[in-house]
Length: 129
Image (tube, rainbow, N blue to C red; front, top):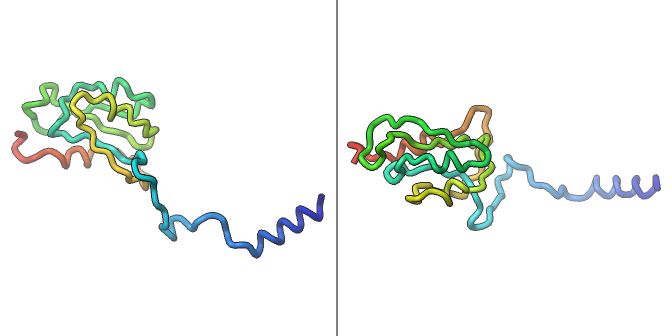
């Protein structure tokens, strides 16, 4: 038993590592259709709150819009907290106007709270048409 453990340890010392040196070597590829960062397009969002109600991780909070939009009578929009999100995309599926923009971006590790606020607010066209 001890001999097999010792021989295995010696073999692993000279073998190439089986893992990649992430984030030093960014050789990662994701499969097409992988679930990544998502946010609401505020030019489509009607502020119905269905996404926040249906979120199983309670990762979506509704916030007040900085400017009124004609198609959003409640003047609120969803903000996804990616630290809580489990990326089930239930919000994407339940949205009646298909307002969510999806992506395959998965590198979101950070020491600060990372939300969809800035991404969503960037979708507002000037004038609030």
